[in-house]
Image (cartoon, rainbow, N blue to C red):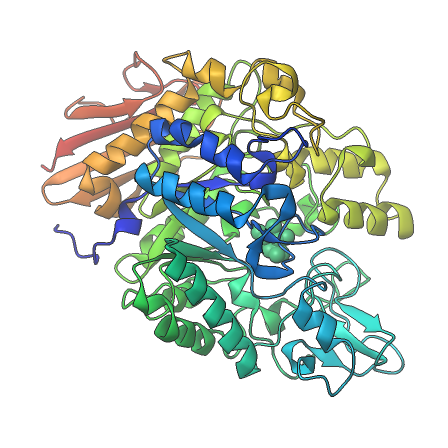
Length: 562
Ligand code: NOJ
């Protein structure tokens, strides 16, 4: 089997996501900043990553930590200045690290001048930049629920109309039907490309085209309706992205990845088609949401763990069905998800390191571009929420108020246990740099409490330990750079009858790569490596047991095809 995919630098790369607020604070105000990132570039260079995906650094009033942008051509005051940004970009490029920006254009902040103007009057030139509707029977225009609880419509006294906000009411949705909006967005993207950035991660890009009939959605939890079918993968989304591609993306050599809530395989084949008429790849969410509604407490909230068989069935489906047609992105966690080792692995002191390495192996050997979320490379874990006081995320705070306080559907303690398991703040506790106060993240008071386990789990300790999760990731990244089969090999699922082992092969030329990962804390029989032919590329165990995989053991063997 020869390489049939079109080669691209971003297919061969490993991406590292930085959530700037929580990465490194250089000036002691308790908030991470751009200079903090620049100071830690040598750490990322040592890890060996190729690209940084920077969560939003634009000017923002921070209702949703920067995903509410009030000026796309300026930097958030907390994070520094445009000069700081330019220096970071130059320093990163000097070290052969590319920078991909977060592009948040489904909505702006309500403090963006477009919206400030838009809400002034019905005939304001910016009125149609957003989605305004008359009340229906004196109430909201339809029953849609916002992703952050409550109605997706906000009444505005000035013109006695409602505007749509799929997220917080400070994040009004842009009206992509209006070609002036598209012109503004494409101009702004071009401005950043001319600055020399290397790509875009596009926030909820699958939601930019709404069904213009705005029908009611199905009511699931007895309160609001689901906008999914009328907002995700909407009628004109591919047309809009093709226009974006023609007018901006095709003029540069960029990495583009669309965050695509509600994306199906068929839709992904359009968004990330091999001809490159839209985006390079998409993020789907199927493997992060494998639980049945009966396993949820309410909405997305649960404390149950996913099962291997479900996670594997989903990832294998994406691996096999995109083959030759579209490119996968690979991730376990990001700033919206709990920590990988806590959700999919085992964060107990005995199993944390070995299971973090197993998960890394399992993901990085698949076909697609891998993403590492800050702290994943040292095996950072979920934190604990003892009260609402510990929460900073608007999603958690609003859900608590809706389900615990207002509708009394869930006891407070149960909600907090759900937060321990799946809250976004798990990913947003500060990066644990060392064992000093506040994990070396800040000399001030951190904007969100540091995970108390920083004295054991931190980058300094990882760098001093040759067997650490950090050096394991470093090796995985290097292997990808050295072995085209890891990038371009065709994926074949193995051992599908097992409930405990995730195994697969990759095929390229006359080579076969065999990967087997034990997802449990018990020894498991495994017949895959019986003959011990081939070369072991990586494993999280130094010694193996014939016919067995040890707890969370991962093995990767490269051999010539028979
Ligand atoms: C997806 C982002 O990843 C998330 O953090 C944000 O809250 C929403 N989009 C709204 O922008």
